Length: 351
Image (cartoon, rainbow, N blue to C red; front, top):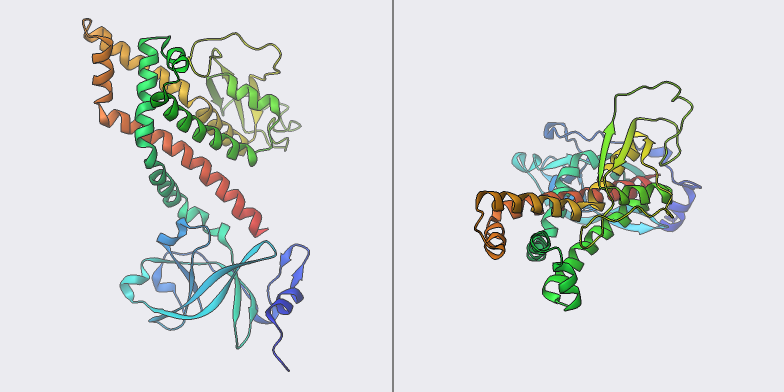
């Protein structure tokens, strides 16, 4: 009989949840092991260094020295891989650069093979590598961050500094402040897009700059309680918020807005607690930088009473290792959010 078109082949195997394995070929999930000695003919593999990409090229072991290339394509909102007439050689040394790729075979014929790469199963292998890549991408904002720190130090030295540069429309400072602030706002939006919290919890976390997470406390009568964030059963921690609200630019204390419904003592599941922790960190990164700069300025003033404000500012900015460490910590927080969003996206695609 004539070979069926690819679209018909895939449609025959599709159910309401997506594609199901080709029963005749007994497709399987390959174990994601790092042991190159386990690679056999027919196995699917991927370069570890390529795992920073969402949908990297994968390869099938054709012989002990030849690999066949598979490229991704999207159909009906799902990603699949098709074999190509392209091959690459490999040897014992290069085998160490690969990891097994878990796949599910969808179509297999004498003309083509189509597989689904179970991407979410390799997240544990590439999370650290992905975070490092994102942190490296954010390095392009290094100059903006230094001006951002300069703004924070100047605000500590002169509490009217931000109001003055706003009045004068000083884009040297304001431009970099907007850039860094927008990155943090974008990170918050991404985190909230995968976290079904109520508005009151979000406002509470954004309002209070300090928090304590209690993991060991009385568990009586908690079996009937649901997470305050996602409302699912399974309380893990108590998330306690405190501290004084502050102005987003001047960092000066402001009264609590009584119109807002804030929750300062929240019971959360393990997943929501981890996300609340990083959301709180990003929401108050600017304030914490200000507090850190205030501490450093205080040290300078105490140790060198005769130093002028300009000298203190220049000396602190000259501490490149200190500035780099602050920027590294901030970039790590941003990258963690990117990683969480990516994990959620892969899990949804695999469902």
